Image 1 (cartoon, rainbow over the protein chains, first blue to last red):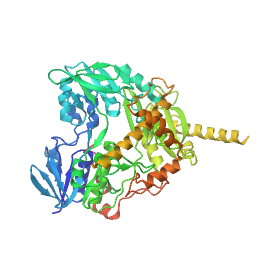
Image 2: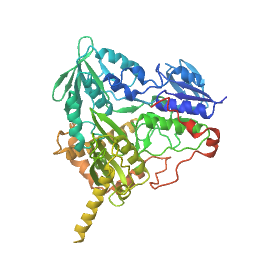
Image 3: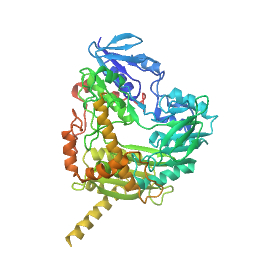
Image 4: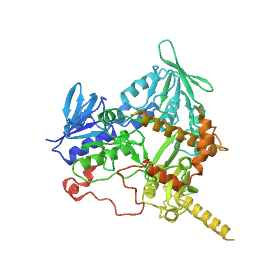
Length: 451
Length: 109
């Protein structure tokens, strides 16, 4: 019987394993994971800390037994220490196990702050649900938490911990939170929302060290501007692809340092595949490889690997990265890139900006939705955008990412069809409004140039 | 990873960081609730020399350079970016497993 080994039990690993087994039940599929749990949503952890979700158990979507019932060979709390591509074996507990096909889904780890004191007790990284359960118990006796980093996980943690009644200090080098995703015109509502929850922002400053007590537990964060006392630190700087096994085995790495894969999730070694945060994927606009994508991307890549391992021919498309989240109580989202990143890379763009509403203007609870789109100056094809405000941000960002991938232009969006139903949609769709505004501006500019 | 790869990655990070800080500073100026980004030691050279030089290069030339230097993905097809037929499962796959069974919404989010 042909044997498929999957290393990693996150979104990519579970998708790859379960779908491989379903598509070809004759295969022996073994999953190795160093953790005791599988099939839970780590994305939900900040909301349990914030008491928006009652308990961690709610984040579990399936059980190890259920996978075993489905015919998977589950090796929990089993660390793979070596991959030998020549012999086609992996090693666990000093015992080699052979494979015919190998899928690497070893995920990521959080970048550790490169400052003194980073190894103190009390620095918490949001990843492993068991550690988060322990941390949650400790939070009951804590008063003040420092959050280092202003990326999505840190902003969600800061908002959640403040909601729970803890005093939260968020520290970042950037000039506004989420500055790698958001443009500055969205900073104020996001900051206001976090501050209303009780988060104190320390932006534009660098963490210089973590200070500990005599027991080696963190008690303060020293920044370039202040000393912030704390009972614990939550940190989430950047996701680093966990390539240790792949690198030691001699698999090709890409320009980001993550595992190189082609559009079928094949690595440089025949019969060896990779999916999820361990590998790099090109951005659809410029084909430059990127890392640090979402759980939804990881799952989809695991599915592609499974289809191809079982004889299919399925390509994974370069990504347009729709994203969205709630910062404090304020919903933000986007796709591909905002002005910030386009300008950093040097990609030319024109802007389409508009403000619409989420329901008919006379319907109670209508909220403003702000849309900013970026398009190529000559063709007006979409290249990115940032949205914020009321309901429907997530759906609009998903739609816009897909529209950009298919080459939609501001002309297409200005005259798109839309739903008008008072409780769920206004007469004019906010995306339409932004695109119409941009076309009107283009016409005015052309007229001005002609006269 | 080799020291050459480390050096290349370090150079890329420094260059990206300098470009990003310059843009953050410019875009954030005058916007409510924003501050200046933190500037690490050694930023001056990158800000005064590299950023202006990089910005003078037209995007088309940058794109060509990225391709020539191997900075774009290999083994991937650039997207067509025009409407096309919806995806359908390959015939042999569809015969083996109904499309609905490819989804396992119960296993992850």
